Length: 390
Image (cartoon, rainbow, N blue to C red; front, side):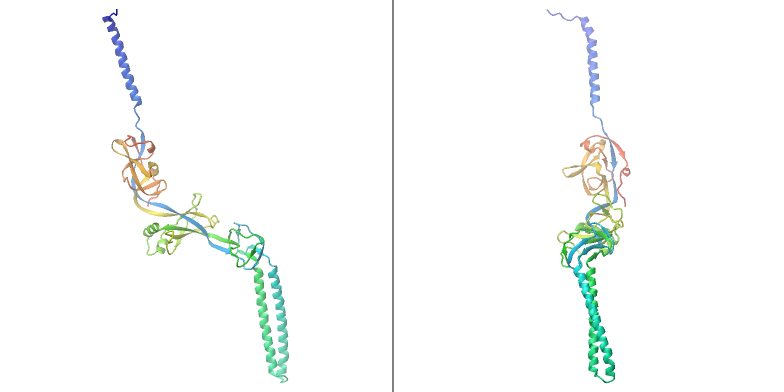
């Protein structure tokens, strides 16, 4: 048989139950407070609109101001090669020797013929001097004098002809030593010792590049060319080119060549196949750092009208679109797509999506979602903006 709790027992338990209930509620409230999400503190920038200079890069191929094909002037076997590919040579330096035995014998033969011609001239001169007094004394007719004089004139002509043959043979002999026509660098040498070469050989012995000045050839598309014509003053393309500032050459390793170049000429017409037009920029090359056949990129300055500047760090990409987080009312963030007109360095120049004065999250965008609340920490745009102003 169960006994009912007495009144005094209920009075004893009630305070204990109240304390337990109060403690439980207090612990629950503390736990909820500890688990509440923290509001992140993120840097925020106010966007600015400004005109700027950006740089467009165009692939370029380099050539020496003079790329001279070295070709043989006589036929024969290469007897010796005095230089190696890539060597720097000076004007007059011997590059190749072609076997000269044939041409040396031709010179000796021409000299012998010259001596014979000179001897015949002496004989003809003696005959004239012997007949002349006889004619004057009417001992012989003047016909004999005229005949002797004609023989003398023929002997003079033979001497002149023999001298020309000697000079020609000497020239041919000199051609067996192929020399550098100017200072420069030796290119590829396709022929080797023992190769038969001549004036009809298709390939040159080598190509000598004079590299005190280097030309960088590059092309602009039709749209870029129209933009170029609108940007610079002048009634003709030549006048507009004169208004262009110096340009940079970006080397294959990403470094910038230390000396500036100048755009000089432009092709007269567009290439029908590529739809582009060719330009040439000239760069000084005093130390021979640039070589023919090198590649690089020409960096042309482009002046843009006022655009909203957005740091690339403040954006993220999704499905081929670029977004930024705008800070709206109550410090809630909302992602908006932006339309990029061009890029310079680490900055986007934006045509649509945001406007000057809008506040966007500068960093930490990868951790945000639409509707998140943040504690904005406003930082100056000038402190991070390094784009070159006009």
